[in-house]
Amino acid sequence: MKIHFIGIGGFGMSGLAEYFLSNGHTVTGSDISDSNLLRRLKENGAIINNYHSAENLSSDTDLVVYTPAISPDNPELIKATELKLKIIKRAELLGAIVNRKKLIAISGTHGKTTTSAMIAYELIKNNFDPTVFIGGSMNFLNDSTYRNGHSEYAVVEADEYDRSFLTLKPDIIVITSIDSDHLDIYKDLEGIKSGFKEFIKNSKKESIIVACGDDENIRDVLSEVKNMKVIFYGFAENNDYRIIRTDCDEFYRFYFLEKKENNNVQEYTREIILKIKGKHNALNCLAACIVCKQIGLGINKFANVIKEFSGVRRRMELKYKNKFEVYDDYAHHPAEIKATFEALKSGFKGKMITIFQPHLYTRTRDFYLEFAESLKENDIIILTDIYPAREEPIENVSSKLIYDILKQRYNCDAYLIKKEELVDFIFSLPLENSKIIFQGAGDITNVCDRFISLLERKNN
Picture (cartoon, rainbow, N blue to C red):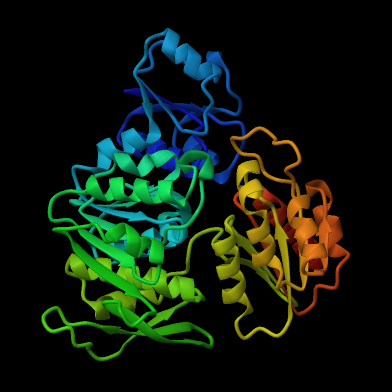
């Protein structure tokens, strides 16, 4: 087949493109930005243009794949319609590939990428040979988002945006969190809950749900579930697996109790050691541990492998360490920002400096108060322009909404700086004994890389 991907550079699209390349198909595509993922695809034989044009699409194309981020007036989409080519959404194509397998689908507003990566890492290292599709670059996959396995197992990140996860039919569902987000799609929290209920209904018979029982929204969604095995995990006492303590020294450790299947009595304490920090990552890891146990992988084997897991690209990723540390972080929701701050601040006596790029005008409009609340504990906060992604500007919606709350309500040391001026501004600050976080789901990662490149040049 000859397959054309419109918007091929996204995590989900690039993984599918690589899947078809590795299975001998011809892949073409387009994307307006450049990235390591695109360069990887080109090296593997994909023909990619860094612009959208009807000329990118040839009449001998067998299948055209697009994402929700692609607008209806995209010239390639219009031409595909005119040529009467077969057109399919990314999520539908993913479902067609993985639904026939024993599918482990990891869902949730926050934490699904890291949890998916942990499960994939364990299954690969323990020779389960899974097929993997994850919304982030993995070092254990040579910076890919995808792996072509040959067993009956598939590990897939189940994205709630645009209700994409409704194309999946899982055997095991993980729900890490349910929070207000993507309100351009769901309108409100009740709409999001309805989406998750429908996702659960799509699962196969005798499927299993592994869910964070500390989340009231998850408890509410699952209160109506019948004839399915539900396993709750978290810090609260009413969970089937309960974290009772966390410690942080050179490594991050957490300890949990596990209820016996038959009599509700809790077993002896288990210890898990992690390279990555934070209570949110302890929860992600415990979810992964439970999933692996359900498919026959013992907790001791899990613990021996997971202690080597080094995380996901752009999830609290430490990119530089000398007299100060520099982190690249994908967090773009207030709850994620707060979790990152708490993890990196724990036990640290120096300054916390966050450079935050809001993602989407609608999200900034809906959560600017919560963004300010999650950022306020930083010693220095630098805000830059909103990354629009798929959206057009909204009148009176800008990063200044967050900035004004930080200054007026919380009296923070906050700054509004244009993206092209960020690096020079950061160099003007006293940085020694600080943790610097470049944060957001947009192209702030490029600013982080440029800053580090200049640092290394100065050091040499």
